[in-house]
Length: 432
Image 1 (cartoon, rainbow, N blue to C red):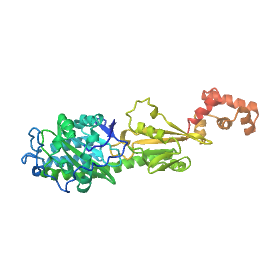
Image 2 (image 1 turned 60 degrees about the vertical axis):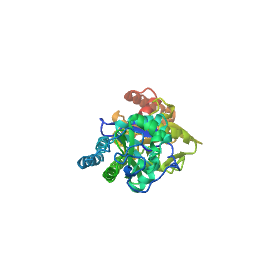
Image 3 (image 1 turned 30 degrees about the vertical axis):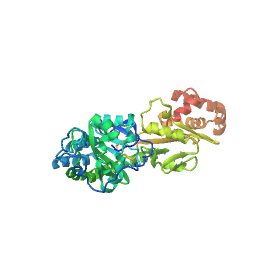
Image 4 (image 1 turned 180 degrees about the horizontal axis):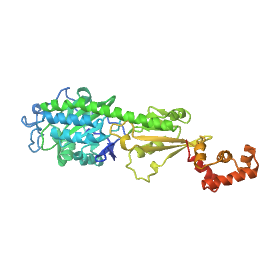
């Protein structure tokens, strides 16, 4: 797999309880391609023409003889294409499609990973799961030259090992000799997948018992790029539609909410959130920016988006942001679940903001109907909930203290409360 610094966590593929995937994410920027890496001409690469390779088999020097690449069945490739298109509307089908494409291309495993702007995020087949864990745990991502082929993949839609590493050097490189080969992996191919402006890579990883991806195989595999891109783009559009529904629901409740992607960038916000911008915080280049406390909020977002921290981690707790001369704001990030969290979903978490300066909203009419209150009792309840004492409430309503006291006793009896604080708390639970 192309090399990026990862953090490990697990996600469930939305909409299909029987499919679970491992997902790796990075919060760091992509490294620059090594200046010594060789970039070959924009062409499909046939290893049988390279020096140092057996012309008939296309194997690495010093590696046990490998069988040639699998003979690909056009009908099987068509079935893989169909599975990818099915996955556009069924998030649980992505892994089945990846398993199928790995099988028909003679690969040991496959994965889809983001290349730009997502971290990356990776959806692998089970067969490459251990490889990816070691890739992170043992720091092999720091020595992976494969991502140097991304410029080639951007231009042509396809890349193989030979496009960015000298074939004669491959068997002597630590990455291949000490990492891939002992785990039974060898040749790699990457296929460009796009969803709008976002770039992804469908990676194929062959076992050591298979030869390289030869020219004829590359031609057959390359045709999958448009199909997977269409499926991924449709999946993302459907995910956006679901997201818009969530935003509309939050708007109806007049909630202050931001919806963020895997890197904590804002992709949607409610109208109430828009109104709050500029007063105490901003959204700059897609990120929530506070006057103070940005690092704490960033840690909170990361902990909520990637639940690889302990549940009692301090980073998971809501972030309280102090404001001079005002009551604070409280930020709380909640990771989306179920259908709201597909692999290509534009948002993976919702950030709610409570403005403690705002007057709490409540539905006194519904409260009154539920407890069968009289109009007089409701007027006293409103006065009490607005933090009047009983004497002040009586004066504000133009009634005697004894009358106000009688209504208060009836309120407490009907609502099973014992004092003004309990009564106010109960009323606020009837928020509109």
